[in-house]
Length: 418
Image 1 (cartoon, one colour):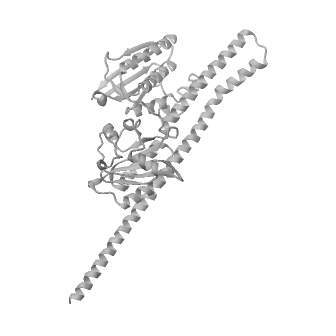
Image 2: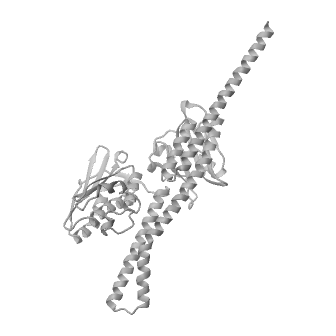
Image 3: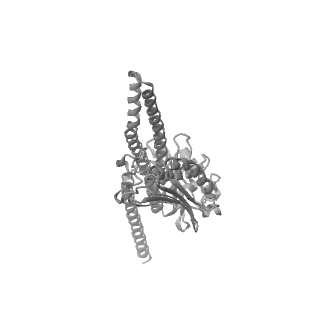
């Protein structure tokens, strides 16, 4: 009788083990199907920043963790930099170079995965990022991002939910996903480069054609001094324009690839606006434009890159001059709303047609291009918009055709005040 119960117990235990194995197998199949689905989505992404957000979102979902981050190596300096992180504003970690002695640095240098269930016990862990972001790291699982035999960065997931420990399945899942993510990142980078090169070549043709044509005339034709000097002025103007275009191309390429490195510090926005007014006033007077400034005598400081904030406002103010009507008006205003600073540049130009509003921030899109008024790369507004977003703000546009336009952007001020 006892022997029969022992056999029955053994059979029951075997059945339970088979059931557990079948359940694990089903979970693995579901996980693999999810990885395949995510890989399909990742490889369809051709823009780097949206791709990185997809990667960290999928990584936290698949490993049931609180946060994730992607770190990529800078091809010039060889340093690791944060490029995307869950729940963290990009500017909070963007300038944080990750040392080789850190956890991510170890993963990158050794080309090996690493699991740490309690970071406080590991000498490679540093509080630098936690202090900068307010996030509390408890545990880390990290794997290298590899393309063939080359390591391009690291993918980390942080804090297993419910304070559980990382499992072998988590490691296997993240490793599989990282291999797909690395290929997608490289594809996005290559696509951006090829797309950017094509755009650059197209836009550089006009000034280059002028320079080549007029210089050839100078070399092959006997010209009177007046015509000779006029041709030289054209060459000088087009060469200057060419230099400005190259600067814009490089600026946008760095922003879109995530390689733009901004220096964040406390910035006196009243001083920035005053500097812009000093630059714009002569241009406004030359075009017989009235320049009005409605800015409080004192503004709270914001956390940002002063040079880039200057660039944003200068771009908007220059456009207000360029696209205004003779005898028109430009008004620069600044206002506060709770923890937000809003800066606006209003003009009395022709405005923007409703059908053009959706493409306003597209690359190489020029306002009123058909009128022959606008010159330049058509990159000023896309660059300004991305810079605003890197500062944690938003760009706003309102316009009435035939009346004028208002370009405004917001900046958070809470953190700077604290």
